[in-house]
Length: 306
Image 1 (tube, rainbow, N blue to C red):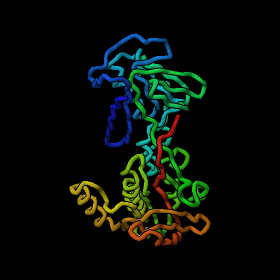
Image 2: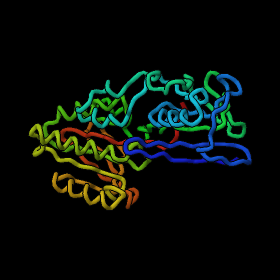
Image 3: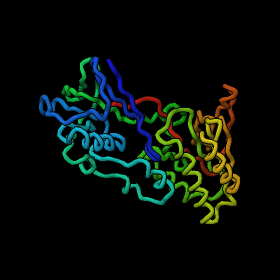
Image 4: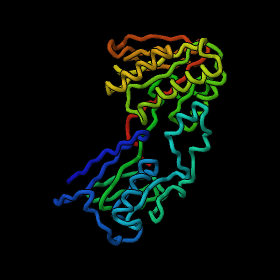
């Protein structure tokens, strides 16, 4: 098997795309050509798994290379969400409804939409199986299934989301709670966290922190707010140039940043958050929050099968 792997980065969308092709011959993406399907609706030159922003984008690009009739997207959801905008939803700058559209309206014209879930991949035979017992073969496969939210990796979640002062910008079910918590805020600690796992958007926890601070400043609550950013990372940003600029903003806005702190438990009834010191495994710190705990963090670690 000759795997062709590619990572498609973007300023707001984190996408993992993987191309699989069998056989001894190697081909480059630019060598893709338009060809008739070997069996209508059972074979496609390019098969895309996942109809999120990443999958839709790749399907549109492949359509221009091989023709729309040779591209299909497998996606079970009737509704497509543009998730990068959820940071603005959590800050009250955009309504949640603006992020959602019927999936049919975002599928590139002419590209086949297969409404099903993928339950099995068989790269040895260049095919996949869906939850309706259908086998679909391909010449090229693009995997863009995103990542799965694993809130249960944090003790006290997801049941803790029932508390009015805990929210997450990574889920359509909880993002509006962040804005509600900001509106209801009176005084105390506002905690933003970055987990010790891969995430959809590494900048999202910081962005909602800065937007929240701006909201507090605008509404006269800033002096009563102790804004804390607990991150599992060892730096505010991986690129020195941008890290220095962000550090300047942090100083100007009087924000507290604690590094190598990983959220491991939420005690919603006590309004407490428990963090582990990653430099000293087993050492924990409990932060009591008088008014609210806001989580803009995500625990996720594996591809989700649609």
